[in-house]
Image 1 (cartoon, helix red, strand yellow):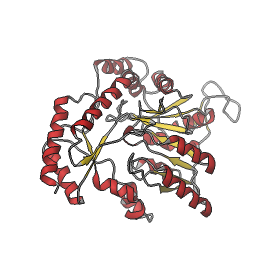
Image 2 (cartoon, helix red, strand yellow; image 1 turned 135 degrees about the vertical axis):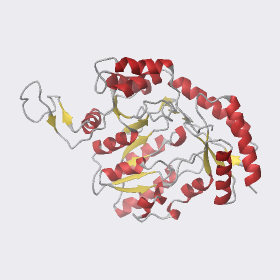
Image 3 (cartoon, rainbow, N blue to C red; image 1 turned 30 degrees about the vertical axis):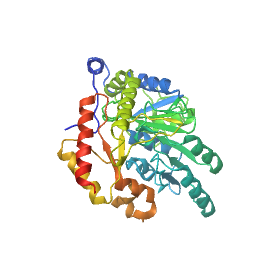
Image 4 (cartoon, rainbow, N blue to C red; image 1 turned 90 degrees about the vertical axis):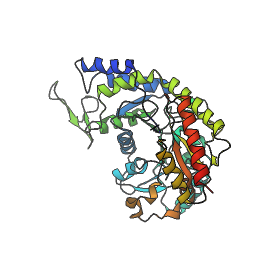
Amino acid sequence: MIPYGRQDISPADIEAVLEVLQSDFLTQGPKVPEFEAKVAAHVGAGHAVAANSATSALHIACLALGLGPGDWLWTSPISFVASSNCGLYCGASVDFVDIDPHTYNLCPQALAAKLEQAEGEGRLPKVLVPVHLCGQPCDMAALHELSQRYGFHIVEDASHAVGGKYRGEYIGNCLYSDITVFSFHPVKIVTTAEGGLALTNNDTLAQRMALFRSHGITRDHELMTKPSDGPWYYQQLELGYNYRMTDLQAALGISQMQRLDEFVARRRQLAQRYHELLQDLPMTTPGEHADSSSAFHLYVIRLQASSSEAHRRVFESLREQGIGVNLHYIPIHIQPYYQAMGFQEDDFPEAMNYYREAMSIPLFPTMTEEQQDAVVESLQRATSECLP
Protein backbone atom coordinates (compact mmCIF):
# COMPACT_ATOMS: atom_id res chain seq x y z
CA MET A 1 0.00 0.00 0.00
CA ILE A 2 1.28 3.45 -0.93
CA PRO A 3 -0.17 5.75 1.79
CA TYR A 4 -1.58 9.19 1.04
CA GLY A 5 0.94 10.64 3.50
CA ARG A 6 3.59 9.59 5.99
CA GLN A 7 6.26 11.02 8.28
CA ASP A 8 9.99 11.06 7.52
CA ILE A 9 11.96 10.32 10.69
CA SER A 10 15.74 10.59 10.36
CA PRO A 11 18.54 9.27 12.62
CA ALA A 12 19.04 12.88 13.78
CA ASP A 13 15.39 13.05 14.84
CA ILE A 14 15.76 9.85 16.86
CA GLU A 15 18.95 11.10 18.48
CA ALA A 16 17.24 14.37 19.47
CA VAL A 17 14.49 12.46 21.27
CA LEU A 18 16.98 10.09 22.93
CA GLU A 19 18.90 13.07 24.31
CA VAL A 20 15.75 14.27 26.05
CA LEU A 21 15.04 10.78 27.41
CA GLN A 22 18.50 10.84 28.97
CA SER A 23 18.09 14.38 30.35
CA ASP A 24 16.48 15.72 33.52
CA PHE A 25 13.29 16.89 31.76
CA LEU A 26 10.76 14.82 29.83
CA THR A 27 7.78 17.16 29.92
CA GLN A 28 8.12 20.84 30.87
CA GLY A 29 11.79 21.52 30.23
CA PRO A 30 13.87 23.76 27.96
CA LYS A 31 12.95 22.14 24.63
CA VAL A 32 9.41 23.50 24.42
CA PRO A 33 10.45 27.18 24.56
CA GLU A 34 13.32 26.38 22.19
CA PHE A 35 10.89 24.87 19.71
CA GLU A 36 8.52 27.83 20.08
CA ALA A 37 11.35 30.29 19.44
CA LYS A 38 12.55 28.32 16.41
CA VAL A 39 9.14 28.26 14.70
CA ALA A 40 8.42 31.91 15.51
CA ALA A 41 11.80 33.01 14.13
CA HIS A 42 11.36 30.93 10.98
CA VAL A 43 8.01 32.47 10.04
CA GLY A 44 8.64 35.94 11.46
CA ALA A 45 6.06 35.99 14.26
CA GLY A 46 6.45 37.68 17.63
CA HIS A 47 5.28 34.81 19.83
CA ALA A 48 4.63 31.08 19.61
CA VAL A 49 2.66 28.98 22.11
CA ALA A 50 3.07 25.22 21.68
CA ALA A 51 0.24 22.82 22.53
CA ASN A 52 -0.43 19.09 22.48
CA SER A 53 -2.45 19.37 19.23
CA ALA A 54 -3.63 21.90 16.69
CA THR A 55 -7.15 21.33 18.02
CA SER A 56 -5.99 22.50 21.44
CA ALA A 57 -4.21 25.45 19.84
CA LEU A 58 -7.41 26.48 18.05
CA HIS A 59 -9.31 26.26 21.33
CA ILE A 60 -6.91 28.44 23.32
CA ALA A 61 -6.77 30.90 20.41
CA CYS A 62 -10.55 31.33 20.59
CA LEU A 63 -10.46 31.60 24.38
CA ALA A 64 -7.74 34.25 24.22
CA LEU A 65 -9.90 36.29 21.84
CA GLY A 66 -12.78 36.14 24.30
CA LEU A 67 -15.08 33.98 22.18
CA GLY A 68 -18.02 32.77 24.24
CA PRO A 69 -21.79 32.31 24.52
CA GLY A 70 -23.70 34.72 22.31
CA ASP A 71 -20.80 35.00 19.83
CA TRP A 72 -20.41 33.51 16.35
CA LEU A 73 -17.46 31.71 14.78
CA TRP A 74 -17.47 31.27 10.99
CA THR A 75 -15.23 28.89 9.08
CA SER A 76 -15.03 26.75 5.94
CA PRO A 77 -17.23 23.66 5.60
CA ILE A 78 -14.33 21.85 3.88
CA SER A 79 -12.00 21.14 6.77
CA PHE A 80 -11.55 18.76 9.66
CA VAL A 81 -14.21 19.24 12.34
CA ALA A 82 -11.72 20.87 14.73
CA SER A 83 -11.92 24.11 12.73
CA SER A 84 -15.51 24.61 13.86
CA ASN A 85 -15.57 22.55 17.06
CA CYS A 86 -13.19 25.06 18.66
CA GLY A 87 -16.04 27.59 18.61
CA LEU A 88 -18.47 25.14 20.18
CA TYR A 89 -15.95 24.38 22.94
CA CYS A 90 -16.23 28.07 23.91
CA GLY A 91 -20.03 28.03 23.96
CA ALA A 92 -20.27 30.08 20.76
CA SER A 93 -22.48 29.42 17.75
CA VAL A 94 -20.93 28.23 14.48
CA ASP A 95 -21.69 28.96 10.84
CA PHE A 96 -19.90 28.34 7.54
CA VAL A 97 -18.90 30.24 4.42
CA ASP A 98 -18.88 28.37 1.11
CA ILE A 99 -15.62 27.65 -0.72
CA ASP A 100 -14.02 29.05 -3.84
CA PRO A 101 -14.43 26.39 -6.57
CA HIS A 102 -10.85 26.87 -7.77
CA THR A 103 -8.78 27.07 -4.56
CA TYR A 104 -11.19 25.08 -2.34
CA ASN A 105 -10.57 27.67 0.38
CA LEU A 106 -13.11 29.95 2.03
CA CYS A 107 -14.41 32.30 -0.69
CA PRO A 108 -13.90 36.04 -0.02
CA GLN A 109 -16.85 36.97 -2.27
CA ALA A 110 -19.17 34.57 -0.45
CA LEU A 111 -17.89 35.94 2.85
CA ALA A 112 -18.52 39.55 1.80
CA ALA A 113 -22.10 38.75 0.82
CA LYS A 114 -22.74 36.84 4.03
CA LEU A 115 -21.26 39.62 6.18
CA GLU A 116 -23.48 42.23 4.56
CA GLN A 117 -26.54 40.14 5.33
CA ALA A 118 -25.36 39.32 8.87
CA GLU A 119 -24.76 43.00 9.64
CA GLY A 120 -28.39 43.73 8.87
CA GLU A 121 -29.46 40.86 11.11
CA GLY A 122 -27.11 41.77 13.98
CA ARG A 123 -25.25 38.45 13.89
CA LEU A 124 -21.75 39.29 12.67
CA PRO A 125 -19.01 36.80 13.61
CA LYS A 126 -16.57 37.54 16.40
CA VAL A 127 -14.00 35.11 14.96
CA LEU A 128 -13.36 33.91 11.41
CA VAL A 129 -11.27 30.73 10.94
CA PRO A 130 -10.05 30.52 7.32
CA VAL A 131 -8.49 27.14 6.52
CA HIS A 132 -5.43 26.89 4.25
CA LEU A 133 -6.61 23.65 2.69
CA CYS A 134 -3.92 21.28 1.37
CA GLY A 135 -1.23 23.89 2.18
CA GLN A 136 -2.48 26.67 -0.10
CA PRO A 137 -3.15 29.92 1.78
CA CYS A 138 -6.47 31.70 1.58
CA ASP A 139 -6.69 35.19 0.06
CA MET A 140 -5.69 36.69 3.39
CA ALA A 141 -5.46 40.31 2.20
CA ALA A 142 -9.10 40.21 1.11
CA LEU A 143 -10.19 38.54 4.36
CA HIS A 144 -8.19 41.04 6.43
CA GLU A 145 -9.81 43.96 4.63
CA LEU A 146 -13.24 42.56 5.47
CA SER A 147 -12.21 42.03 9.11
CA GLN A 148 -11.30 45.72 9.36
CA ARG A 149 -14.63 46.75 7.87
CA TYR A 150 -16.81 44.47 9.99
CA GLY A 151 -14.73 44.18 13.17
CA PHE A 152 -14.09 40.45 13.52
CA HIS A 153 -10.92 38.60 14.55
CA ILE A 154 -9.08 36.14 12.29
CA VAL A 155 -7.51 32.84 13.38
CA GLU A 156 -5.73 31.18 10.46
CA ASP A 157 -6.06 27.41 10.55
CA ALA A 158 -2.74 26.71 8.85
CA SER A 159 -2.58 23.09 10.00
CA HIS A 160 -1.73 22.09 6.40
CA ALA A 161 0.50 25.02 5.59
CA VAL A 162 3.72 24.97 7.62
CA GLY A 163 6.40 26.13 5.17
CA GLY A 164 3.94 27.60 2.67
CA LYS A 165 4.05 31.24 1.61
CA TYR A 166 1.62 34.06 0.90
CA ARG A 167 2.81 37.05 -1.11
CA GLY A 168 6.38 35.88 -0.68
CA GLU A 169 6.23 35.69 3.14
CA TYR A 170 5.96 32.56 5.28
CA ILE A 171 2.50 31.65 6.49
CA GLY A 172 2.41 32.18 10.25
CA ASN A 173 3.71 35.75 10.40
CA CYS A 174 0.18 36.95 11.31
CA LEU A 175 0.37 40.00 9.05
CA TYR A 176 -3.30 39.49 8.15
CA SER A 177 -4.59 37.76 11.28
CA ASP A 178 -4.62 37.82 15.06
CA ILE A 179 -3.41 34.24 15.46
CA THR A 180 -2.15 31.43 13.19
CA VAL A 181 -2.31 27.76 14.16
CA PHE A 182 0.00 24.99 12.89
CA SER A 183 -0.35 21.22 13.22
CA PHE A 184 2.50 18.76 13.71
CA HIS A 185 0.54 15.51 13.33
CA PRO A 186 2.63 12.71 11.72
CA VAL A 187 1.24 13.19 8.20
CA LYS A 188 1.76 16.97 8.25
CA ILE A 189 4.77 18.83 6.79
CA VAL A 190 6.89 18.38 9.93
CA THR A 191 5.89 16.35 12.96
CA THR A 192 6.19 16.31 16.74
CA ALA A 193 4.26 12.97 16.78
CA GLU A 194 1.22 14.89 18.05
CA GLY A 195 1.31 18.61 18.56
CA GLY A 196 0.22 22.07 17.55
CA LEU A 197 1.31 25.66 17.93
CA ALA A 198 -0.33 29.08 17.93
CA LEU A 199 1.53 32.15 16.65
CA THR A 200 0.70 35.80 17.27
CA ASN A 201 2.27 39.25 17.27
CA ASN A 202 0.09 40.38 20.18
CA ASP A 203 1.70 40.22 23.63
CA THR A 204 -1.61 39.94 25.49
CA LEU A 205 -2.95 37.15 23.26
CA ALA A 206 0.30 35.19 23.70
CA GLN A 207 0.09 35.60 27.46
CA ARG A 208 -3.55 34.49 27.57
CA MET A 209 -2.95 31.45 25.35
CA ALA A 210 -0.06 30.38 27.57
CA LEU A 211 -2.39 30.61 30.59
CA PHE A 212 -5.19 28.61 28.98
CA ARG A 213 -2.69 25.97 27.83
CA SER A 214 -1.63 25.18 31.40
CA HIS A 215 -4.65 25.09 33.74
CA GLY A 216 -4.94 28.90 33.81
CA ILE A 217 -2.01 28.91 36.21
CA THR A 218 0.89 31.37 36.37
CA ARG A 219 4.05 31.74 38.43
CA ASP A 220 4.69 35.19 36.96
CA HIS A 221 4.49 37.63 39.89
CA GLU A 222 3.64 40.50 37.55
CA LEU A 223 0.40 38.73 36.59
CA MET A 224 -0.66 37.70 40.09
CA THR A 225 -3.59 39.44 41.75
CA LYS A 226 -2.22 39.27 45.31
CA PRO A 227 1.24 39.06 46.95
CA SER A 228 3.20 35.82 46.82
CA ASP A 229 3.32 33.55 49.87
CA GLY A 230 6.78 32.24 48.94
CA PRO A 231 8.98 30.74 46.22
CA TRP A 232 6.52 27.84 45.79
CA TYR A 233 3.64 30.15 44.97
CA TYR A 234 1.39 30.07 41.89
CA GLN A 235 -2.08 31.37 41.07
CA GLN A 236 -4.89 30.14 38.90
CA LEU A 237 -6.23 33.14 36.98
CA GLU A 238 -8.40 31.40 34.38
CA LEU A 239 -10.20 28.08 33.93
CA GLY A 240 -7.53 26.52 31.76
CA TYR A 241 -6.66 23.11 30.38
CA ASN A 242 -3.76 20.68 30.28
CA TYR A 243 -2.85 21.32 26.64
CA ARG A 244 0.92 21.34 27.10
CA MET A 245 3.47 19.94 24.68
CA THR A 246 6.24 17.75 26.13
CA ASP A 247 9.98 18.18 25.74
CA LEU A 248 10.07 14.86 23.87
CA GLN A 249 7.69 16.22 21.24
CA ALA A 250 9.46 19.57 21.08
CA ALA A 251 12.86 17.94 20.57
CA LEU A 252 11.49 16.01 17.59
CA GLY A 253 9.99 19.22 16.25
CA ILE A 254 13.26 21.15 16.58
CA SER A 255 15.06 18.45 14.61
CA GLN A 256 12.33 18.23 11.97
CA MET A 257 12.34 22.01 11.47
CA GLN A 258 15.91 21.72 10.16
CA ARG A 259 14.43 20.02 7.08
CA LEU A 260 11.26 22.05 6.64
CA ASP A 261 12.33 23.82 3.45
CA GLU A 262 13.66 20.52 2.07
CA PHE A 263 10.34 18.80 2.78
CA VAL A 264 8.31 21.55 1.10
CA ALA A 265 10.62 21.69 -1.93
CA ARG A 266 10.25 17.94 -2.46
CA ARG A 267 6.47 18.10 -2.07
CA ARG A 268 6.31 20.88 -4.65
CA GLN A 269 8.56 18.91 -7.00
CA LEU A 270 6.30 15.86 -6.76
CA ALA A 271 3.20 18.02 -7.19
CA GLN A 272 4.59 19.53 -10.38
CA ARG A 273 5.32 16.04 -11.70
CA TYR A 274 1.75 15.00 -10.92
CA HIS A 275 0.49 18.08 -12.82
CA GLU A 276 2.34 16.87 -15.91
CA LEU A 277 1.53 13.17 -15.62
CA LEU A 278 -2.19 13.64 -14.96
CA GLN A 279 -3.00 16.36 -17.46
CA ASP A 280 -4.67 14.00 -19.98
CA LEU A 281 -6.79 12.10 -17.45
CA PRO A 282 -10.45 12.98 -16.69
CA MET A 283 -9.72 15.03 -13.59
CA THR A 284 -8.83 18.51 -12.39
CA THR A 285 -5.46 18.90 -10.69
CA PRO A 286 -4.78 21.53 -8.00
CA GLY A 287 -4.17 25.11 -9.05
CA GLU A 288 -2.32 27.81 -7.15
CA HIS A 289 -3.43 31.38 -6.63
CA ALA A 290 -0.93 33.92 -7.97
CA ASP A 291 -0.21 35.15 -4.42
CA SER A 292 0.37 31.65 -3.06
CA SER A 293 3.13 29.10 -2.72
CA SER A 294 1.46 25.97 -1.42
CA ALA A 295 3.19 23.64 1.02
CA PHE A 296 1.28 20.77 -0.67
CA HIS A 297 0.42 18.87 2.47
CA LEU A 298 -2.19 17.17 0.28
CA TYR A 299 -2.58 16.66 -3.44
CA VAL A 300 -6.31 16.67 -4.18
CA ILE A 301 -7.69 15.78 -7.59
CA ARG A 302 -11.30 16.34 -8.65
CA LEU A 303 -12.66 13.56 -10.82
CA GLN A 304 -14.83 14.37 -13.80
CA ALA A 305 -17.30 11.78 -12.57
CA SER A 306 -20.90 11.68 -13.72
CA SER A 307 -22.19 10.47 -10.35
CA SER A 308 -21.29 9.83 -6.73
CA GLU A 309 -21.36 6.13 -7.58
CA ALA A 310 -18.64 6.58 -10.25
CA HIS A 311 -16.57 8.58 -7.74
CA ARG A 312 -16.88 5.76 -5.21
CA ARG A 313 -15.95 3.10 -7.78
CA VAL A 314 -12.71 4.92 -8.69
CA PHE A 315 -11.87 5.29 -4.99
CA GLU A 316 -12.47 1.60 -4.28
CA SER A 317 -10.51 0.54 -7.37
CA LEU A 318 -7.49 2.53 -6.24
CA ARG A 319 -7.65 1.06 -2.74
CA GLU A 320 -7.84 -2.43 -4.25
CA GLN A 321 -4.72 -1.65 -6.31
CA GLY A 322 -2.78 -0.70 -3.18
CA ILE A 323 -3.09 3.08 -3.53
CA GLY A 324 -3.96 4.66 -0.18
CA VAL A 325 -6.28 7.39 -1.41
CA ASN A 326 -8.39 9.37 1.04
CA LEU A 327 -10.97 12.16 1.00
CA HIS A 328 -10.23 15.44 2.73
CA TYR A 329 -12.86 16.28 3.84
CA ILE A 330 -16.47 15.34 4.35
CA PRO A 331 -18.17 18.75 4.64
CA ILE A 332 -18.57 19.58 8.31
CA HIS A 333 -22.14 20.80 7.90
CA ILE A 334 -23.37 17.34 6.80
CA GLN A 335 -21.99 15.59 9.86
CA PRO A 336 -24.91 14.31 12.01
CA TYR A 337 -23.87 16.47 14.96
CA TYR A 338 -24.08 19.61 12.82
CA GLN A 339 -27.22 18.57 10.95
CA ALA A 340 -28.89 18.31 14.36
CA MET A 341 -28.20 22.07 14.63
CA GLY A 342 -30.23 22.64 11.47
CA PHE A 343 -27.64 22.63 8.68
CA GLN A 344 -28.77 21.15 5.36
CA GLU A 345 -26.71 19.59 2.54
CA ASP A 346 -27.61 22.33 0.05
CA ASP A 347 -26.61 25.19 2.38
CA PHE A 348 -23.12 25.27 0.80
CA PRO A 349 -23.33 23.99 -2.79
CA GLU A 350 -19.67 24.48 -3.75
CA ALA A 351 -18.60 22.45 -0.73
CA MET A 352 -20.93 19.64 -1.79
CA ASN A 353 -19.67 19.77 -5.39
CA TYR A 354 -16.13 19.42 -4.05
CA TYR A 355 -17.11 16.47 -1.85
CA ARG A 356 -18.66 14.58 -4.77
CA GLU A 357 -15.49 14.89 -6.86
CA ALA A 358 -12.46 15.21 -4.55
CA MET A 359 -9.83 12.58 -3.78
CA SER A 360 -6.45 12.89 -2.04
CA ILE A 361 -3.76 10.85 -3.77
CA PRO A 362 -0.39 9.91 -2.22
CA LEU A 363 2.16 12.67 -1.67
CA PHE A 364 4.98 12.65 0.89
CA PRO A 365 8.68 13.67 0.82
CA THR A 366 10.13 10.16 0.69
CA MET A 367 7.86 9.16 -2.20
CA THR A 368 9.87 7.84 -5.13
CA GLU A 369 9.16 8.52 -8.79
CA GLU A 370 8.49 4.78 -9.17
CA GLN A 371 5.77 5.01 -6.51
CA GLN A 372 4.37 8.09 -8.18
CA ASP A 373 4.31 6.32 -11.53
CA ALA A 374 2.43 3.44 -9.88
CA VAL A 375 -0.18 5.89 -8.57
CA VAL A 376 -0.62 7.40 -12.03
CA GLU A 377 -0.92 3.98 -13.70
CA SER A 378 -3.52 2.95 -11.15
CA LEU A 379 -5.45 6.16 -11.77
CA GLN A 380 -5.38 5.52 -15.52
CA ARG A 381 -6.74 2.01 -14.97
CA ALA A 382 -9.38 3.05 -12.46
CA THR A 383 -10.72 5.98 -14.48
CA SER A 384 -10.83 4.00 -17.72
CA GLU A 385 -12.73 1.16 -16.05
CA CYS A 386 -15.00 3.14 -13.72
CA LEU A 387 -15.83 6.39 -15.49
CA PRO A 388 -18.17 6.44 -18.50
